[in-house]
Length: 342
Image (cartoon, rainbow, N blue to C red):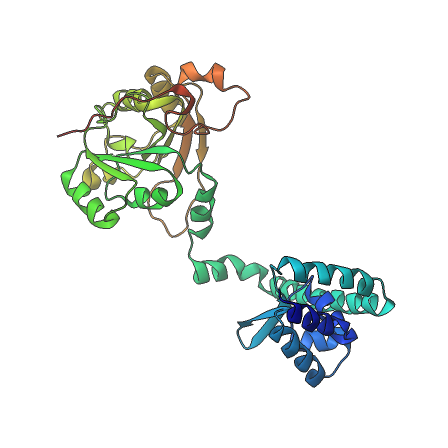
């Protein structure tokens, strides 16, 4: 800041109205109308002072719909920040500033009431309104951001790559495997040149993935197609790191026998006891099996989600961080180079 800038800025802060405006805008982002109400000044006066503060780089504004919102410059340069802090402490101690703050609180409360009144009237329709605006899967997709972005995830039986497409932006790498070359071709078209996706052709009972490669393995609506599910689960166990986790999403037992004929299902749903036996035989520990909420628009059987960890890792995991915290080889050392199918 030059010497001339210092005097210009000191001059701007010397005006009581401008210093009051800055004090309010140091804590809140407000429209001209709201500033008029807070300081009890006419619009012409507030607008004139805002222009002077903007010219001297004290405040910035942004458009939001038909309104313009003002606030103090977020990152004042060091010299300006020192000047403002000296003035701010003096202005904030005045009775006028305290009354300004009370009126700002009333303005913000009015904003809150407007939102509360909307939700009071829309509570019964809110889910449908939100789905119409943002889609039905927004909450689930957003929750993917909680995943460790270093995770190596196996989408085992990836089909057309729909799940891989959802997972890839949230994790370090996805290895997607499917036995159908036609499905993989569709997946390649869907996923394009995603840098962290590795599509591989292979059987679930003989995965083209080296031991201990995966932090998470997912079998999403796949297991009911597998004639030898224990073999497929054991392969997933082999491909997982010692601290890894398996997720199985599939159909609960049901009476829609026509799915065997129409879609080639091998198993007419998978119950908790059956899955627990398979998992135990494949080398997994206790299974957490939960029914998923039924989608009223769906015509198929109800689904479950089940998770389990490799049995040998359970003791070491007690009280430890969530699966994948070390991501990849992590504390386990380097992984072997992964083999690829022809």
